[in-house]
Image (cartoon, rainbow, N blue to C red; front, top):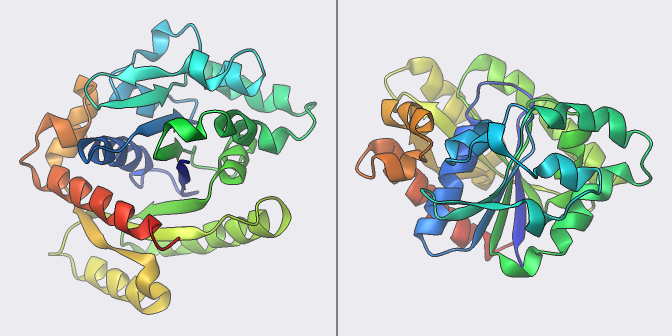
Length: 256
C-alpha cells in the first residue's frame, strides 16, 4: 500500500512544486512506483511533469466533483517516469462546488484509497493556503513534508502550518503527522540561512531532513522544458540532492 504525503506550506514561493516534481522523479529513479497529484489550480506540477494543462480531458477537478476516477484522470509523465493526476484552472471552481457535498474534506482520500495498492508513494502538491483543496490533501495523507527556506518569514509561516496540521490531526485525520522539514534553496554563504537552519535543528531535531537542497539554476530552468530537474541535468547539485532526498524518504518511511 502506498504511503501518501502532502507537500505543503502556507507560504508561497518556497519550492513546494519543485520539491513535489523532483521528489517524484527521484523516487521513480530509485525504482519506486509514484503517483503525483496536482492539487493546485495553477497546474505548475502538471506542466513541470511534461503534461499540457490546456489539453486535459480529465483532471483532479473531475475526480473531486465525482465525474471521474483517479485511473481515468491520471496520465504518465514520460520524462519523469511517474504518473500524474493533472490540474488546471477548472480546479479553482471546485471549492465552491464542494461546499454542498457531504464529507467534502474526505473526497480525495476516498478516491486515492482505490489506487493505493498500485503505488509505493503518492505525493500531493498542495496550494499555498489552508483551503478546502489543501484540507482534502491533509485528510488523505499519512504525513506532511514541509519545504522551507531558511529565512525569518519562513519561521513565522511554519508556526501557522504546524497549528493547522494539529487541528486536522485532532478533528479529521488522526494518522496525520509532520514527516519532516526540508531545507530548500539553501545558500551556505549566507549567515542568516545558517542561523535559521541551526534553529530548525535545535527545535525540531530529527524532524529536519538531513538532505539540504541547494539554490540551483538548473532546477529553476527545468520546468520550462516540462522536465523534472532530476532528469534535466542529472549531474547538477540540485538533481543529486533530490535523488539523495528520495533515498532518505525511502529509509524514513520504514520507521513510520
